[in-house]
Image 1 (cartoon, one colour):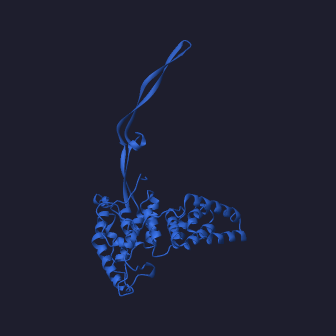
Image 2: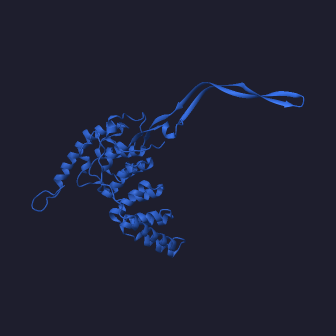
Length: 344
């Protein structure tokens, strides 16, 4: 059941307890198994600022990146869509050299204002056209990375989501983090799960606070939103039949009565007029466990689905760990000209 609205609010941590008894556990490295340096694509020069401060006890989780504004105005997007529809008609109605030329034309697109329109027009085409569009985004720098992340979260085709994820640069840019942040705050449960999967796939440690509070959400429905109708009902009882009326039937020199049979139910009826709904985002939880275990070097699966336990772990264990790590990284930063330390 889809909830009406969903937001990441830290205040909920004070009221939420542990999740289901049998929590899902991600495949993670054992505690203490991480030795040596991290792979180059996961390495940071400094620890992200969002991981150096405890999560407050009230208010919303801080954003991991500023919100993105559309690169193109509505008028510019419509103009580009018209161009791409024309390109599609000229090149993608068949096969051969003409189709190959169209694919190269798609791959060569670099204007960031064109990316949204390009996907709007080409997303329903065959795989070779869609992959060519993904190649264009991969070469499109900041806006291209955002578009890849958006597709990895929102597209209905699992294979295309995987191809988009494969083209995202590690560590993720601010544009990718913005798309993940939007996904974790979405109302659509599928988008939330896919944003969690993407965060884990690109090792977006900046997303850890958001992942903690996107693991599950409580919603509520009531009978009033269904115009007074019940959500469900259960009846347990016996049905007894009786003659509730008779209808006279008159013929030539004759008369009779036709009985009308009624039924009475004896027993109990349970009517459900409203309910509380908890939506568990398993992919978000698995990414959170895998990423925190890897990055901290300690097993976090035992925290289960308990948001309060995760909140306390982040504030009391993870933040101090990252603060110490950042101090070490700061000492390794080369000095700026004039002998001053390079700015953070």
